[in-house]
Image (cartoon, rainbow, N blue to C red; front, side, top):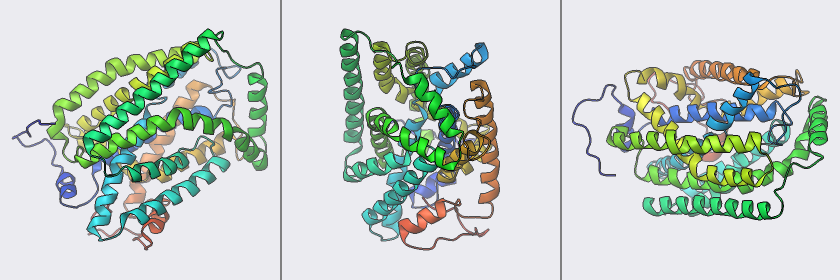
Length: 419
């Protein structure tokens, strides 16, 4: 993009941008985006952690009424299938920063990255079995191998490949919807309600019962990850790779007009796609219409995710940018800790590990819990990073990645740790 930089001084200085361009510290705007993505992921994941019915096409018994219906629509329209794309985009962008970091240190990048992927995969397997079958770390570890193989793609080629992947995936959904329509329309299997009720009881049992329930859910979750999330996540990886090569987030002043266009596209076309997706998922589950809507969402969800990202970036560089960054960036710097921490807290709330409230909290209550939990995480992250260079789980992952011992305590005169 050939937008000329502004000549006037920006409202808030961004030394991290220049620092990155010269091989410096972290970008706070990237961390802020990652923190925002964590919030959206929590809003979706908590609905699955709190109910064995969510995703089956059936409502959890006893949770009707307009308020709960509004909460379901809120999550489906604005959150589902959007925020994992933003997180995936940032994974691809950070991939380029990790390459630069290895080059600055004269280290071989490929072994480092393979160790990182191995660490993510092991953590993801434990997470999926013990806390939440919907883990995404294992998917990232596998797709990371493809990203590694494609790391030399030129930015324009990476973007074209991503768009092609999304279009082909959407076309496959459209074809599947056509086949389903001609075959009679599909529907929800008769055993779905009894299976969900059994899973609910299993999740309310002891630790062994919870683990067995998670293992029973893994095949269905793996199918969802491979055929729905994986193509879109890989496309987002590639878009992040292209943006990272262009240093697109290093100085967003240069892309002000483009950010406005992303907002316009996201909050019109992207939002409309979210409404169609929500209507199909909530009102016509198991139908050909739902399958077609999922294909449409493959194309429109990235636009809404991009609109969100553009909004956060513009807020970060605006008059209240310091407050926005202070609220979101610390959580983004500790994304692995907070991602797993969200699952741990929800497991203690909803399964037999703790209060066993699965199926007992209304959708509107889940929204309130998610807001409160993320608020606590943001405060905890700021407190932790005042004293420590890395998050509790980021530190061992970095140790394994670099085969070194990073600093545990943060020195007052030290720069923020690099990616």
